[in-house]
Length: 148
View 1: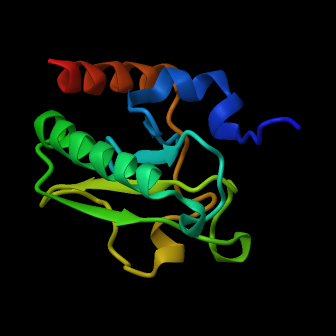
View 2: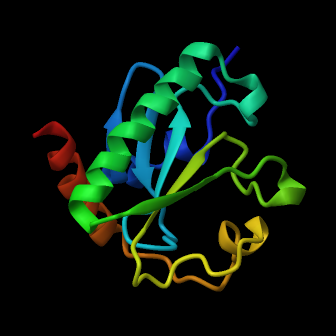
């Protein structure tokens, strides 16, 4: 039986956008950021919902959350964060691989202004995709901050 995959595990551009990894999870930049540095954290194992995560995977996601949060503070001067995930295709989950959104916030950003989750996490056509080469450069910069 083959191991489940998702676009997060098979697309080469995700690897180029990866900022950090640990034994159970990885963090990478989204291609449609709400604010600069908008990062996704997913378990390495492909599961659709938070309910399917093991305790070890959840701990790995939490550890990466702290690491990414620190890097985003350094890189962008983030003072706060929005964290969220969508669960279920009818509720905004476009990739059936659990992923936590980390949106860095600053007082002057144009980030989330409407706190309806479907409006700020799943806005098809309302945000342009960032070019892959730009995302790869940002990922490299954030990764360097984490590894310094």
